[in-house]
Image (tube, rainbow, N blue to C red; front, side, top):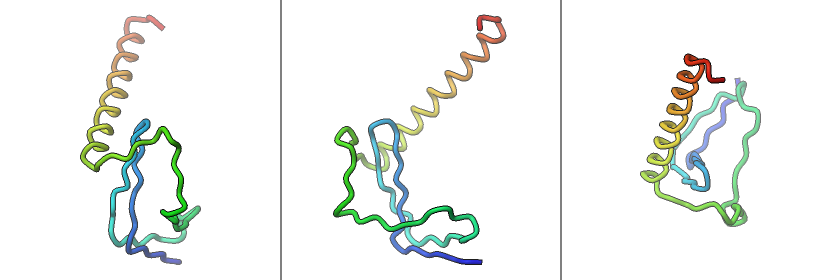
Length: 86
């Protein structure tokens, strides 16, 4: 078993045109499940111009709104199927 560790690990959360890098701290990853791992050079990294950096609180609100919209869409689809409006 191969183990990788990263002291400055972060998760990039993207919702629509918003993104946030959330620091995770130390992460240990079992190598048998890793397909690709790499280190980002934040000085060279370029994001598309339409992407906007937001705070962790803002991205969590955006995630919640996206999840609620998806749930509502699924609920409406079930109602339509029940009423046979396919």
